[in-house]
Image (cartoon, rainbow, N blue to C red; front, side, top):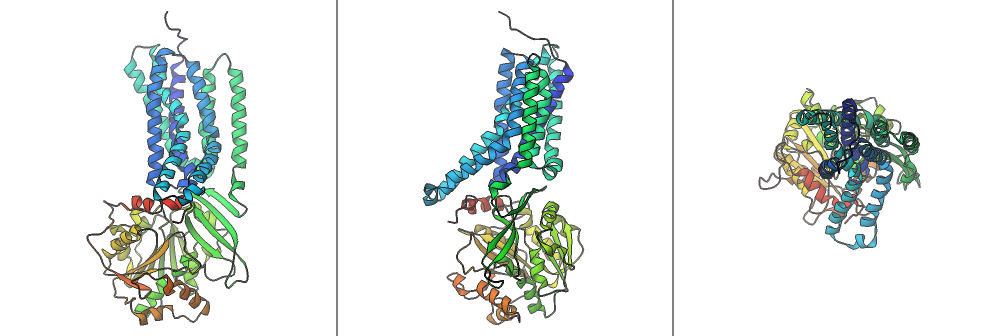
Length: 553
């Protein structure tokens, strides 16, 4: 019995289906990175999971599409599949969000997870990512079926299969190009992730509804209900689940930003105080923190004023011009200007959206001596002709450290922007075998002849990871000498003296450590990161894997 074939659809409509299905594929893939960022970050491993699972879904879709098109080459059948896929895309954020919370709770919050070893953390990450990737890529299987299905339908009208295939794939790819740029440049920074999925799902839904002729009115009603529900859910979101202390959340061009204000015990601001801080992506990347009525933060940020203090002690002159790479809420400039109120500070932050989000809550961004530059730190150094007495590098946010800002070439570029007595300093979070710290320290030592490090001590118990500070210069700073160290920390302000005394408490020293500062010598046998060859990102993810799941050990 011959196959039942319907009237061949108009070629222009097939092209429209190819375009919008291709746009939806890349739109879902690009928007999914923002969906996973608050839970898993935006590392290369997360992108590998998203891209890899998308390619697997497309492979399955291409194969199934070709098989089904041969057996049932009917446009209404394809339209119904795409309609369901479009509805799935619209509601995908509201399914994925609780699923990711359940996955993380199951594999990190339970007693079994807490008592298990390091391998469980890896399995948890693998399982959670697989579950989320499967959910995200479920509609991509259907979208992948579109191109072979459309080629088969159009071949019923014309025998020129090669020309038909080229046309379908060209317009599908054109749609994919649009779907690639729209989330990053337009949708995510302006309307957010939820409405991005609504846009791509809604556009596909509007196009596919016309392929269903006999029951079009029913599909129109379902489509309108879907769009209206998705719009209402998009407005409501899920902010209420993040706790009562959330002040603001926004998706910027680079990351997912949340600003919190929480009550904390205060040492110098009375019995209690309010702390305002910024978290990015997976919740570990604290950009800035400050406490009401308190000149310091009781965190590793309190080390930043030490960097210009080192310059002043070693050179005998007051620092005039400073550079802060990685600005956030501008807490580092705020802390530094308490000692050097007349210093001119250039603050560089790549994320304009982060600055805009922080400005109402972090008044330091409006400080008179601070000049804010929106740029990548590396690009700023390449295009800037200024030289600085001190450079503060505050761009390392575990577990995702930008490798191009921790390479030998980057530190060579920074060195060219230092004055003759200039000093560069940075904070590096590390844990476990501290390969991240040792790799960055050795890379710095490959550029500067004099490199020192110090470990920040918290007297209220261990933190999520150990903060170590790296100081480098072309001058012999003699920081390991007790007399020099004492001059650096001997300030008239008794509050800051107490802060730094707690920070350099000998109880926080390592077994072979006798002073706060220790020298670092370059070892060619150890890790040295370059632009061409850097394993920093993979090392960082392995080192901080347990912290992604909220485990300190």
